[in-house]
Length: 297
Image (tube, rainbow, N blue to C red):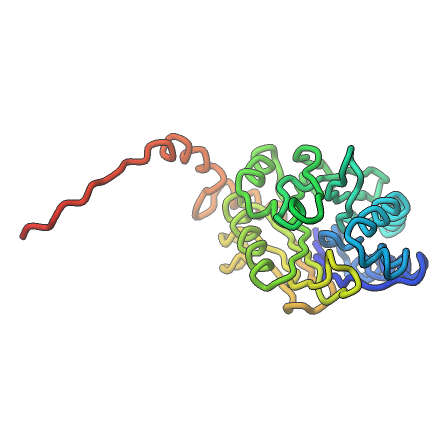
């Protein structure tokens, strides 16, 4: 299969038609390049706040509510595009009201019309302390024609037990939509994503937001590079990087992935991280404290 990761700018839109044209163009471009699975970033849909004007887009709470209210037509657009182009699309995550407060939700659209979603599990300090966006539903393993897929939204990729739960359930591909406002934040997610590919001997797709959006304080600065990672082992690059784009350059990054190669690494690789993972359990609980003594020659 061919995977496509978006380095996606958050743009101002004066009309719904402007947003629809943008998304349609991005999907068409990736599909024309032969992509089977397209991954958009975390909070990319915050650009929809622009439709309500500068005052709303510039207010953290009003922007949340505006984008959440537009989630349904945005989902319908992505569903139509997935069907018409015959591709799988992980749409950019969006705040969606779930009880008293919104969650950060990413939805996967399949070409046969089926959909599934994943809510972010562990919230950043900004989401917790300033924005009050909350953790949502449980981790979900998504069965598709391309294989078993899990989604770890940005910060979630920095926590190995979340990825391990998905891999143990059968995930072969982990999608990591991200939104980071500093180079250090981008690298935290990238290091986490690459570590998850190593530990789970799986494919990880990182798709970030890039560039400024000064009119929306929630996502006003965006730093990142799109990339696709795998285990640094037989049949994969020594670096573990299947493909990567330049920092802060908008556009798609593509990589071909062979599920048979992934299965081979998991069963007969130079190392067997996935299979040997449970061996940590008995050893991690036995931490021995060693007292040092003065050296006597």
